[in-house]
Structure formats: structure tokens, C-alpha cells
Image 1 (cartoon, one colour):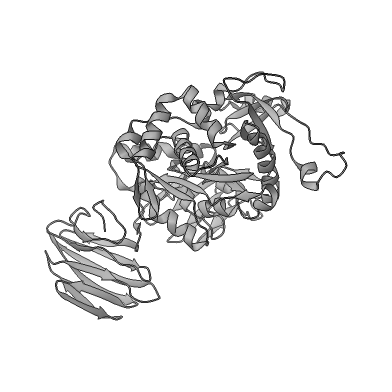
Image 2: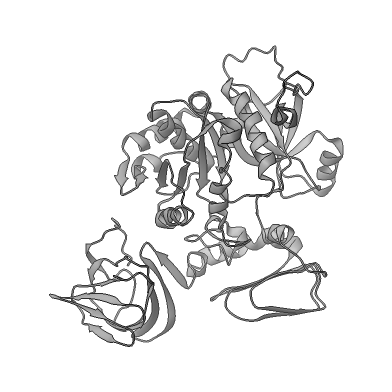
Length: 507
């Protein structure tokens, strides 16, 4: 059996604003420890091959804006991908899975796809691996399998799945049965998906023992998924096929064809296919048109970190129930979350409150209303404000820059260039730049001249002069850039050479 992981990393994470932004979403952030959610998802595959057999490197589907961030995060944990597919814009999870399945089939085999959102937390990896083995066994026989999370509370923020009858029972008494098979979870036929319930209905679901939380994780053979798409979503399948056929290679990325992918309908895996496969099923049922749909229960410390209340739930709390990160002081506070990025955050007399501070925004919410943070993001979008898109520190493939100060006809930036990296060879029509080296060594191209700058040295880049900044050293280069001129927008750039193959008008 060959397992082909597919990691879906296209979400925006609006409920975790202001930490999660459109151009730096939650899956690229670290909420627990030093590893980001994407890195934790990739590392969750470590050791899986000892349970299920061959496991390929993951196919990652992400927004093209995040491509260098995704690649860099894989590099820093010494993992390689099978492919990184770039969506020109989000079309939900069904198209993302479809293009990944088409790529897997194009490689000449028909693997079992393990579909993993990039923004989940799972603490019991051993239990997760056993559940994957149970699901992969069903998928090998043609089933489409979803993981249902064993509920720990009557949550109203999750969708639910109702179990049908058992598919097969693990043979724990058979002579020679392995320990892993004895511990494998019982599988069930999928009966029906239900929407997020009210509190009373959620309690009834949990009390019945018939319902599981909808995890958004799936296992199926690539060919089986494509056949279901052909039956239920032919227009979506055609758009995905054309976006792959007309795709272009961009460094280590596969860039989906923009025109074809934008014609693709937007839908989730659940709505597009899985909900159409539920209902009364049994091992005697002939599934000639639709594949068998099954559920593998998962009890492995799962969370989708869908809101700040979920961050509080998985965090390490003090005796008063508070979860704190960063420079935080609290007095007489209980069951609250404090997250500080840049300055002291102090709380007094707070109960069930979330406080999140970043360089350019502070968000305060009651935990019971944490899901409504997305309403603030909608307001920011309607008002055309940049706080929904980027942090004050903006990441680029060569490093990052951060706005320090700005006024009429000037702005100041702190620029960090990674070792061995370089900005594009570029020119500006409306601004001049002064560079002061704070740390490291800079190689500067200015017109026909090329020279080195050490710490405390500076140079001037006139308006209209071709220039490039490089870091030839083994340590990060830090400079202060002072821009002056009549127009200081990021789109005032003419790029002549760029090792990262970028087409957008950014540094």
C-alpha cells in the first residue's frame, strides 16, 4: 500500500485575527512551541510508514502568495514535498483535493490519499496512525473514508456526522493478530452529515453516542475520488483537469493555470461529494454508481483551532485557568487568554476574555463570542484596510521588512535579508533610498558599481538608479532603509532580474 499525503494549506484563518492575516494565515503560525501548524502537520507523518507501509512526501496545495513561506517552513524541518501546487485564488477544499488527486495519478500510480488540513492539532500521534491504517485499509477496497472526532463536549461550532452500522469489527481474538490491529478503531458506514447545531441539539447528539464531530480529514484512492467527481461535479473536474494540463513549472512549484482554475466552482469536499454518499448502507449493498462512504472514529487529542477559544482550550493554563504567551501580567483574572507580540499586556479582573496584541492591532473579545472575530475582518475588508492582509512585518522569499515610521514624503523600514539571499535587481521612478547596515555584511549593486558595506556603514540609492541588496554572509543581514520621494508605494518598482521568478510588483 502506498499512502500519498495531501496537505490542504489554502485557508485564511480569519477567526484568529489579528495574528492570522490573509498573507500570513494561521497554518503558517506557531501557537504551541516553536513549530507552526503546517510543520506539525508534516511531522505528523513521521513514523507512519512503520504502521501502513510506504508513505510518499506530501503534495501541498496552497495559495500562490504563500509559496515561499511554505517551502521555507518545510526546509527548516528537513522535509521535502512531492509537489507544491499553487492556487491563483481559493476555491475551497474539493478543487484543491481534485488537483492533488490528478497530480498523483499523473505520476503513474493510484495511491491512497491521506487528506490533511494544515491547521489542525493532534496530540496522540500513535492513535492517529492507527486510525489512518484502519481508514487506508477501507480505502484500498474502494471506500471514501472520513475521520469522525469522538466528541468531548456538546460543541456548537462543529458540524456532526451520524454513524451507520459497523463495517467490520477488529478480530481481537484471532490467533496471531497484531497488537496494532487489536487496537484499531471500529469503522462505521457513513449515515448523514448535519450542520452546526444549537446547544440543546448538540447535547442530544453527544448523549446518543451516534454522532461524531466532522473533522475535515479524509482517506480515499485517487482514482475513486476522481470517479466521484466525474459523477457528482463534472464541471469542477473539467476545470481542475484543464488547470493541471495548462499548469506551468515555477522553480520548485506547480502553478495552476489561472484562467482554467478561476472557472472552477467553489465547494467543500463534504458538500461536493461526501454528503451525497451517506444513507443506509451495508456490506451486502451493491455500490455500482457511488462509492462506499465510511467513518473511522478518531480519539487523538484533535482540535481545528477554529477560534481563539480553541487556542485557550489547547494551551497550558495556570492555576486560575489563564493561558498566556509573551509579556503578560494579570491580576484576579480567570479562564482568559492573553497573547502579547510586542509589548506588555496587563489584565485586571477579567473572566473568559481573550486579549491578543500585535504590532498594529489589539483585539479584545469574550470567549463565548470568539467565532465573531471574522466579522471584524469583514469590516476591515469593506473599509479597504490593510490590517486584514499583512502584519507590519511583511515576509518575502529573501527575508522580511517592517515599517518603523512614515510621514509626508518619507518612510523608514527595517529590512532583514537571509544568508545567501538577494533582493531583485530593481529601480524606482519616484523615490530614493538610504541604506544603513545595522548587523552583518551587505553586497550592494548601484548602477555599474558593486561594493560591500559593513556594520555602521551606509550608502545612497538615487531615484532611477538600478540597484540590488544581497547578503553574502552566513548570518542574517539587518539594515535600516530610509525612503524619500513624491510616491512611496510598493508598486513603484521596475524589476530587471529576480532569482525567485516573481511577477508581482513587490520587493
